[in-house]
Length: 126
Ligand code: I3P
Image 1 (cartoon, rainbow, N blue to C red):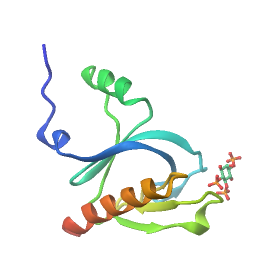
Image 2: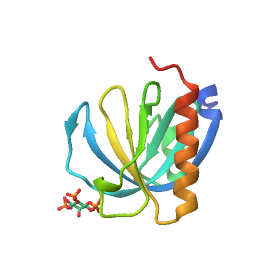
Image 3: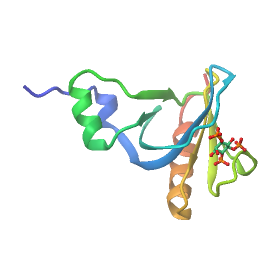
Image 4: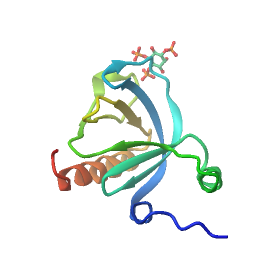
């Protein structure tokens, strides 16, 4: 039978592939490790899927949960100095998760930056 996802998951604002590296978790620095991630932005969170969208959708049916960060009170900024790569920005969450997102393609990274910035600006700060 069909599983109906929660409403929040239906209100996707943007999705696509980006390069992602988590650099801190709960304030603790991590070794940088870039990988391709399927990224889903909804009104107050970003979900990261390690696998393809197709694989992610089938995993979801088995109750597998993606990594997810809360955008309430989060901070987004360009982070030229944090990487040798071009087009890198950083998101820092209230819980102290820091990650970098990157694309070689200028308009793709700009669209993502603006979409996430707009989502954060619409949310209450706490
Ligand atoms: C890191 C890896 C990353 C690189 C990072 C290196 O090495 O090469 O790709 O980040 O540079 O430390 P390792 O795999 O041995 O951990 P960029 O690609 O973003 O430059 P960094 O230490 O200057 O962040």
